[in-house]
Image (tube, rainbow over all chains, first blue to last red; front, top):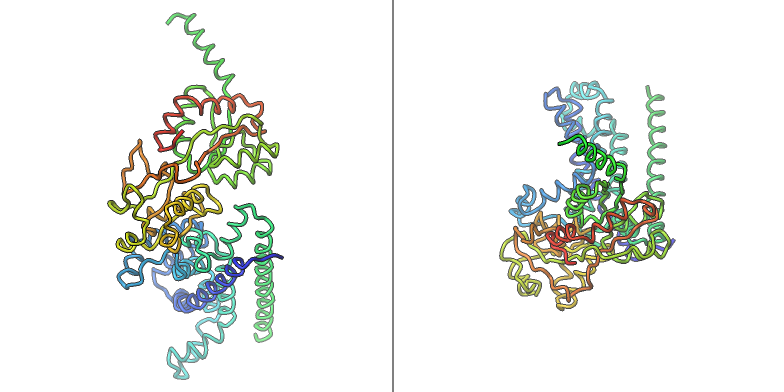
Length: 230
Length: 253
């Protein structure tokens, strides 16, 4: 395999992007998922649909609207300029923002499933033992929902690594700043540098397979545990 | 109308319909708007129908190599048609330049770009607070290569290159500038001109001697070898109707 220095730059940038995105996404997705799992509100369906939108929308649609929103006349662009950060397109944090939107359903859905599977009982029991809501959440809910967190983290990370359309639309393809693995592969293919494309594409293929294999093992182990526990 | 005249008229119609063919054309994305107009006129004038597919020339090349049923290619460069001909995928001797692209430095804001491109010098960039300049990826797009040539010829690499952002195609480059995520950018003149005018923002139409000509060549592909509509379309592209349309979109001939 013949990976160039630029290819390694793209790999390292992609891993940074996926790590930062995953951490921020878990922080954001947890309260959203908790609310979705417990609310009776009429807003549940619209919010759930909004969260699931990136699943069905083409990434070019997300990228296009992000480009408009991030620009100096868009709502996000006006906010970031007001905050003194300039505009976010073509920057690492712009990509982080795009990735959070793009991977949101992959973080929220496993968490909703985990919180729902828990049922109301554990929290009720904790409450009768006079645990505060926060205490019960961190000492009862989070450990019980651990498989959901692991699944959410792995899916968000892998999905962000594989992101293409959004970074193509708002990235600007700047080496070491916004050029990630998927856009680098795209560039190689378009420039007909097939052997270089093969190198990087092979890395992606192996990575994705290993993640899915890991998830599948993890799933079997936790379901077996739960059966044994039940 | 007498019966005889009506019969004659009907038979002409029938004859024309029998002759009318269809041609599938791969068209470089930057030529989308003029080609839609040309195809309509072509259909009216000859009765032949042109099915148009728009996209990146490099992608079309890969598709044609893998057996895509395009009869005609209108490329964004002159290298791809030549290469297809050399590889035996296009009919030798059918290549010609149907349009020459013009490059423009464009800003969505009025009074940013002057008519000599002096805005690219570092003191102007600083004064105007310009921190992003968009070009098409020079590795992938002829317009990107041309833009880099202009930057080098003007000797403004030092001030411009650190501010560059690259669109994957000239279409995306246009998007970066038109959403004002980049305050300036090198786009195709055809993207910003309407009836020979530039209605929005400020622009410098780059003189052609500052870069290699952006020749866009057409070629008849193997799949169009015995297709009368394909041959007719290539001829039509060199006629006056097509030429007028092409020029009105800011291409040179």
